[in-house]
Length: 109
Image (tube, rainbow, N blue to C red; front, side):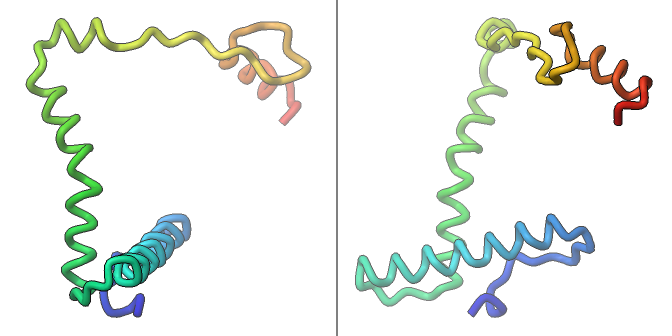
C-alpha cells in the first residue's frame, strides 16, 4: 500500500529516508482511519492530495499574512530572545557559545 503513492524521493541521506517512511505510514494510517470513521469509499490518491492541501493551508495563510503586513509591525511583533544559560556543569558563565569554544579548545571534547 505504501509503494502505490509514496512521498519517497531519491535521497541518499538516511534521516530524510526515515522521514519519508514516516510520512508514508502516517498517510496510510490517516486514510484507514478516515475510511473507517466516515464510511466513505474514496480514492487514496485523492485523499492524500486533500490531506496535503489541508496541512499546508495554515502555513500558507500565515506566510501570506507576514508578507502583507507592513515591515514595522512585523519587527515590533517579534519576541525578544533571551540568551540561553549554559548547561555544561564545568562552566560558570551564562554565555553558551563562549563556554563551548573554551571547552573545545581545552580538549574536553
